[in-house]
Length: 389
View (tube, rainbow, N blue to C red):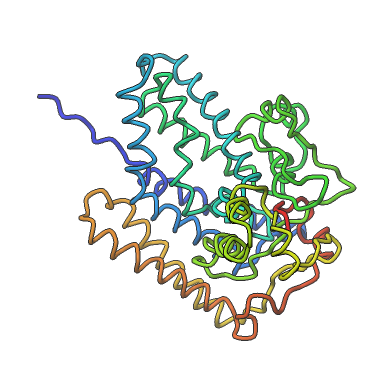
């Protein structure tokens, strides 16, 4: 009987890719340093990478939903079952996935409930390769819905999972300010310039350029915007996080929506809060608990001072947690559920501790020690996030 090589799991592939991610981050840091265009801060980078780790930990427990439902729909409702041995199936599946991703991404910017999860990726007020790793832990309850058409069309689960990983990995390199415009490539593909626009809070750039690999979708559906040199991008969100706490990063917008929904007098408004565009608030709630109108010129970047001892402690602890997460993700499929839960909880607790160490007591209230970001044209000369007030 022939021995078959065991299939590598998705988390294992991410573990193998992590040294490459970190190497490229180091290269980008050195390039920026030599150019005098630094785009990294230790506390922000640790926060972004830590949220990526949390996302991968969550994926261990939610795979049954995200992949299981797709597999069940494919087995029971597929119009046909396409052959995984044909090149055209793989190419078609990648194009189909990218189109489905476009609409998931676009709706995640236009529906408050979906934005509450996706906001995690946009919270960083820096823009660099560590930002690419900043991922949500809360998209799994609804994200699978957008890809069901692929299951119904007969794309095999293994093909679906592979093209999804390809689409995700492609988007890593576009999160940089060190690569400028790329000519014809910018017209057709997601590129650093196009994606800087996507991450910008400037009025011109707000809610644009959703494509994962192809920017053709944005041109076809009217959401394309090119980067304009005279309007440098400012990064972050219009309702800033102002914290390095990874748990609060995932819960902030849900909490704000829940508060507005609770205080709304109308039952219809209680529901609309979750379904309308991010930033929409019932008139009675906005009147009683007003929020200042967003002004780009008054944007402040959250930048509490980090002492050298605290930086060393935070970085050292983070290094240990990164190693522990790699070991866990590599062997997670072999562990019993209680072991998985215990290991994941310990790593998350460690990431929370890194956030606390990175935040001096004077800034623990989520707001002090911010620096005016009129700064940004020099420090982050590209784009920022988008969300509404």
